Image 1 (cartoon, rainbow, N blue to C red):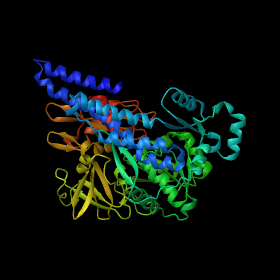
Image 2 (cartoon, rainbow, N blue to C red; image 1 turned 120 degrees about the vertical axis):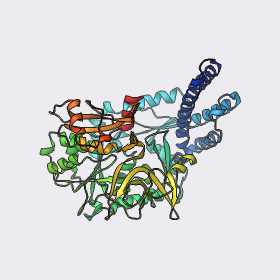
Image 3 (cartoon, one colour; image 1 turned 90 degrees about the horizontal axis):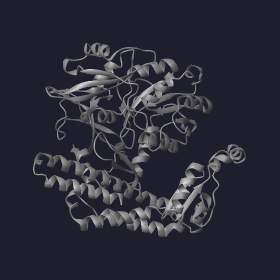
Image 4 (cartoon, helix red, strand yellow; image 1 turned 30 degrees about the horizontal axis):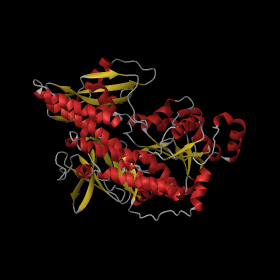
Length: 549
């Protein structure tokens, strides 16, 4: 119903525009808005369809008794993905009806099986869905069974209020029963082709709708081994990684989960990032490594318990996900005695491309050297079909065994990110970089983030780096604001360190005295906080949408 209403609203908008006698100039804008809304609809449906390939193999192996449901899902997905609707079809009622029917079929099939845990809040919601929808089977796992023996026993005895009362029947199965049914059906795990699709890791990039990066089993396995090969400390099976990053993020997927599986290391997990809890977990479990984003390390620095925490087990902390400010690195190392190194990676590269060495020579301000088996090129910033002039920054391009196959059902998008050079296929990163004589890479900025000021290209990160040298500035983001004369004008948004007081005008004067003429900002805006992504890195895209849209 919601889909039909959306389509009707789109059609109505188009109809009103077409009937307007005095609004000729508004037609392109309205059509663009309609197309954008339709792209959002298609993206949502595509995400739902993309769930199916991995779902089928996983559940088929676990429970052969649900084969009929899986068959319906497969058939529904085939129908849904074969029935496409473009903006040109929005005026064709028959085309809309075919698309709606196909998507309804897939939606119904996907809603037959649900897995939850016996936490009251979660189970209550799942049970309501079971009783009031087409859901056929609800599988409930036990939180107590996931805990160590004594903690699980304590929860059953002392924490009964935290365990939902589950009424098991033919439609509500315990997780163990679900697995037993699969064993009774003699379900076998499928053979895995290393080059077959293992994961659809979605990325939105800086613009556009989310795209599913197709990562193979080989991509993920090799990148985990490349990451493990960086460890110079020996005895990897006795490493303990602090797990504060969400595992659905590509950085954590490789640097934590897959890395630990490859080496046999342990992960000391926390439910979410809390600086105090992280410090306690490091000390309790003698963590040896901590992958995180810069804001996490800043939060540890700001926590009063840092000075009292025994961090002697930590050998290295790895920063990724966002540029690591030099002042933060220096302060963290001075306060903890633990080396903090910066790395770099992309969703499209399975997670890790380069890092500074854990021991030995490193070059602050760089993202280190590429991992084994990886090659780089610098492309011309304006024309990726040619290489950047010698000695000049260029768009970083990558070739290696960890690079994705492409974007799921998006060959058009893949054409924009792959380029042929020297008989090889290279992934365009969108990042402007330099490489020195020792192979250390430095990211100058993102092509899409560059600000065009009177014919000059301004790299926001370079202006941000200067701002972060000010003792009062904790975080900084610089974006371009439309300007009638110069095209764009740089504007800075900052947060302040605790106990520091200054004004935006004073910061503007201080900054503009230290940067080039075209890099000078029109304004410095002081805020209590800056927008961040789900993993805690500063979100330039969200800030731009907030203040400019």
